[in-house]
Amino acid sequence: MYAGKTIFSQLMDCLPWSTFTRLVARYDGDNSVHALPCAEQYRAMAFAQLTYRESLRDIEACLSAQPAKLYHMGFRGSVRRSTLADANQTRDWHIYAEFAQRLIAQARRLYVGESLSVDLKNTVYALDSTTIDLCLSLFPWAHFRSTKAAVKMHTLLDLRGNIPSFIHVSDGKLHDVHALDMLVPEAGAIYVMDRGYVDFARLYGLHQAGAFFVTRAKSNLNAHRVYSAATARTTGVIADQTITLDGYYTSRDYPVHLRRVRFRDPQTGKTLVFLTNHTAVPALTICDLYKSRWQVELFFKWIKQHLRIKKFYGTSENAVKTQIWIAVSVYVLVAIVRKRLKLDVSLYTLMQVFSVTVFEKASIESIIFQTPDSSGLVMDGNQLNLFGF
Image (cartoon, rainbow, N blue to C red; front, side, top):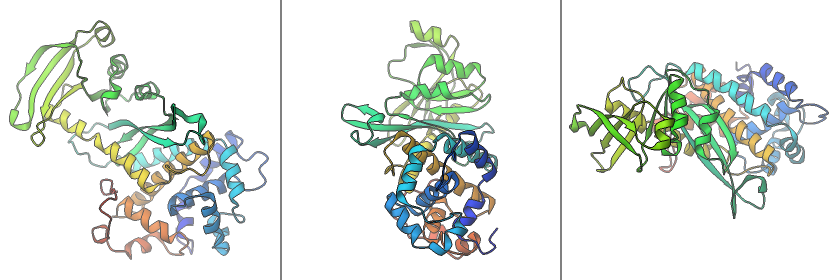
């Protein structure tokens, strides 16, 4: 893999370029392109993500500082900021979205054996969204409120390896619950989500597909108890009930029994009420499953902190979505490299090392193993370290 290549070239070699070429052809990405084809555009944007570049001018200056190495990094010549801006504006963002999905499929196969925080064989997903604020005058297409713009990144995170299995980028006005309409339910999988996704017609769709869900009940839930199971209150579980919905519309939308679990947090004293259609696991496992939903919140914070998805290199919808999808693909690429090379370091460490060694001609393994292990790194207490990633 090394053979005298730069770190950046080795990372790019891990990408399925034949798949990328087919996607470019499908969307006519390189049609009438005379400079900076889609592959070079991707490399320039991936370079920007790996090295934390702040602007197009920054990308141009850093690549121009190493002209002798550009060819070996996959560039036919220098990268001009105006050319890169035009590419981000005009090349169909679906190319990079579908390419990221191919990488996600690879990563999920690699991480399928990862352990969960709960002792279950099921695939467990956490569903949530994050809002990326934008300036309304610069991004008028992403209208959110009267004085601001935003885009939402709806994400279904596979908790085995923290790999996003589904991502949808929308304007800020799309309600979270509509993300359920875009999912193809996986029989036997468990979907963990917050109260924003409580729509009983959609939840019943998951139930009919053979999938399970865990969510929190809203305070105005209209239901009555059918049966109560014994609980060990010392664990914090104060009730484990089978219920039926009583509301006129909700009882029609979800006509079968639900399970309601009440849990009192022994540390804060706060009582939480969970709803699920999973009846075969202990009540405490339902509580632990909902607690694992926090992983998707950490994922959002991690990518906002370590990838460039808060400051954009272009203002058009196409440029913003192109940047977000390339950022996601870079995250997944680093996760793939970590697993394939069996690098026992966090994603945080890998990203930091790659950011200062992309031009180095050395193997990735030698670069990583010459550094202290992650426990010895000086790390800002405000930095997020995502589950050893």
